[in-house]
Amino acid sequence: MLRLFETNEIRRTKSLEGIWDFTKVNEAGEEETGKVYRLPVPGCWESHPDLAVYRGRGIYRRTIRTAAKKTLRFVFKGVSHTADVCFDGKHIAHHYNAYTAFDAIVRDVEPGEHLLEVHVDNGFHEGSALHVHNDYYTYGGLIRPVGMEELDAVFIERLEFVPRLEGGVWHADIRVLARNVTDAPQRVELTGSLAGESLNFGTVELEAGGSRFVSGSFAFPGAEPWSHEEPKLYLLSVWAADPSDGRIVDDLIERVGFRTVTTASGKIQVNGKDIVLKGFNRHEDFGIVGAAIPLQLMAHDLDLMADMGCNAVRTSHYPNDERFLDLCDERGFYVWEENHARGLSLEQMRNPNFAKQCEDVNREMVEQHFNHPSIIIWAILNECASWSEEGRVHYKRQLEQIRSMDASRPLTFASCHRDKELCFDLADIVSFNLYPGWYGPEDPGELCDQARAWADAAGGLGKPMIMSEFGGDAVYGYRMPTRVKGTEERQADIIDANLKAYLERDFISGMFIWQFSDIRVTEERQGPLWRVTTQNIKGVVDSYRRPKLAYDVVKRHFTAAAKP
Ligand code: ADA
Image 1 (cartoon, rainbow, N blue to C red):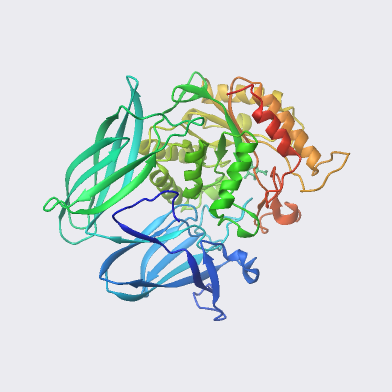
Image 2 (spheres, rainbow, N blue to C red):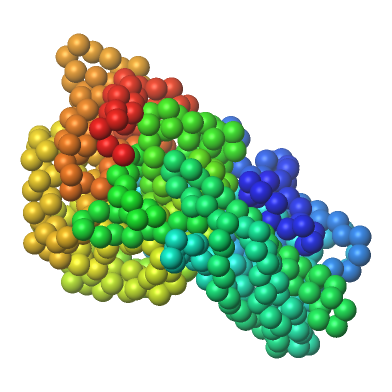
């Protein structure tokens, strides 16, 4: 299952979930041992005992059967980390970045058996600017679902839905991207339906192999708003018909919600009402399944967060699996989604591929996740070199790129540079990663008052402020009356003091605890014992979601009625 609702009723689609062949290959691309593993897709190869610490290259293979001559489209929701796809031995796609989707189209496939191969590489290479040794683990494999679709001459590639409230009635601007996959010009008529209204986008002419957007603006008098409290969702269906005979050749269904997000008077508003974000930073990492988290465990994570009284989650530090975002839409979780870049130094940002790789992930993130009502904030470049003029050039360019694609959501980035930060003027919300009580002895209340002053003096005056990371380590099960660092007691104390300070300050519009669960990290990153257990153990639950003492502390604060 690729999404939590049917995305097509006309276009034939199928999931390629199942067991695929897998072989390791060396740097030269040669199959090393000839041993063929049978691995689940989606899945991380680390789940297999032989491959638990394997980093490098491998090939996933499976057979595809077709009954009639067809144009096929393969959709890969996430291959970690670099993918090259071959169909019957012919290269059809290359993609860098584990955390965004890509597709590959093969025209006029003859009936019969065909070989689909995905060459996967999660090694660290010079040309990779974003996938570097890090404080999380980049697993290997087809970590998210794979789908196969049968296309007609024209297909609807994407929909964009931007809601707005006018005179008490919901309206929306809707854009439809249609693509011609043949060598001849094509014409299609585009119509749709949403919230009881019929939509007409007119007839569009598409040149051979070309694509085009058509748009329309519509009123939806019967629509009700989406919010945390009432996450009302609607299916937006669009059909493409052949104007000569009215035959429907393709369709695409999205699930949308009517809501606005604004920032004013130093606060964040959803549908005009001030909100305070209360939640966690969450990595996609769960015990033995790694980054390939099955639906029921994704739902379990959100169940635990809801139990603690959270209304928000930050997808640190990359775009998330769409099924998780679908769950957030359904459950009314507010999402801060960010691009894939964590803690890159100025030197790392000078990698010649940095700008292009960021531009790609920004574009793919916004295009692919545009319609999730739950996403209320886009963010970039967690803790990169925003303290320097050279770094600022990248922050400016990337924020402008995202704003040009989507002006309907506020933008931010998480900074750890305190009074040295140079980019707060570029964002709509100022966000601080500070770890009072853990990395330093500061008092959380005093430090965040100071942070407000730093932001005000550095271009953030009047902007909402989020405490985007705070917390401390705790080894699951390590309890001591001494409450020393590393005990569950100390972690609980630190989180208690931080939450108390932030919840009583009116100028704080959100807080994200670092972090939801313990996660695996790359071993190579720094000197010995940098991360004992090769995990970042600041989770409030461990990597199998067993609660630490801090769980009840969070629950007590977030379920208290003091704040909306
Ligand atoms: C940073 C970073 C996180 C994590 C955290 C920590 O703020 O953004 O990814 O590394 O520190 O645990 O120290």
